[in-house]
Length: 77
Image: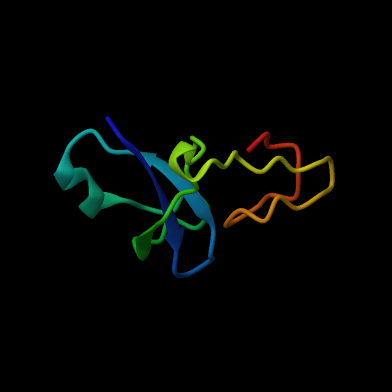
């Protein structure tokens, strides 16, 4: 069962949603404002790209790792 990230068009909150069946994506609601105007966003990958010889960026406390939607540090990505 995949977990997807959705962004609310109304309040811009981003939420992770567990999708058990494909039809469940039609009923995604914002946990912050209860809007049904949600769209799926691209999640940051959880594994380094070994083909490129790279590794995941790691943010220092209060730092910015540069990843999409970086939380500002402490996430260990």
